[in-house]
Amino acid sequence: MVRKQRGFTLIELLIVVAIIAILAAIAIPNFLEAQVRSKVSRIKSDLRSLATAMEAYYVDWNSYTWRDLGDDPTYVEGFCQLTTPIAYITSIPQDPFGEHRYSANMTRRWPMLELGTGRVGVGSSGARWTNSNGMPSDVWEMCSAGPDHIDDTSANSQNLGITLTEGQFPWPSLTDNAQTIAAISGLCYDPTNGTVSGGQVYKTGGSPLPGVWGSIFMNNGR
Image 1 (tube, rainbow, N blue to C red):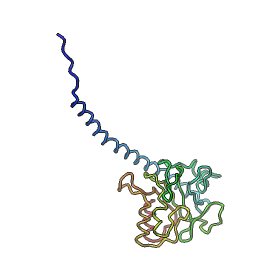
Image 2: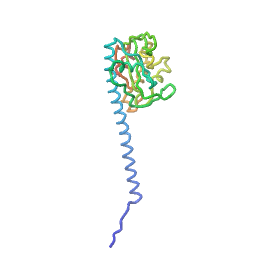
Image 3: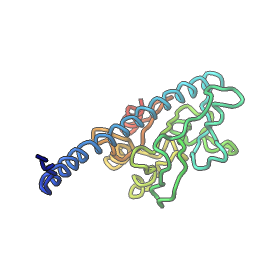
């Protein structure tokens, strides 16, 4: 006697597909969040290494390097002074979050880190070929665009009449008020708002910046 093989019914197949879909809906967001957390950890480690190199540079030259806008891979500005002619660090890491967009006009930017240096209360160090009153520099900040892939150094300043770009750091014209503090807070990546929260991942060092806004910014980058 031959026994008939019983196949799956349509209802059973639909139930299996539904279960797989539910499991995928749970697993994929967790996987993506784990990726973001891993990249945040990596960039913080890279920034710590660069910070060590920057402080070693200061010991030798009594100044930090020039600023570096990270906008062109064919040349590097202030960061290159950490590798040549003295190798304070062997190489400059790229942003693990990859290419990003500049918030002012949404143009594509290279996966490069950015660096701002200057004198507190005076102005930016400017580029290497400029004669800037921000040199010798006594404060620095460097950053990644963060998991939202947006360079936020313009969007938070459009309604304030101020510019929060690396090219203007340490922003000597800023004064303590609610708008400024909100703008500075908005610049800084906060994982408590979710792993894809907006804002940059910062590292800061050197002389303290003035006011409440300065404390918020530098404490975020410690």
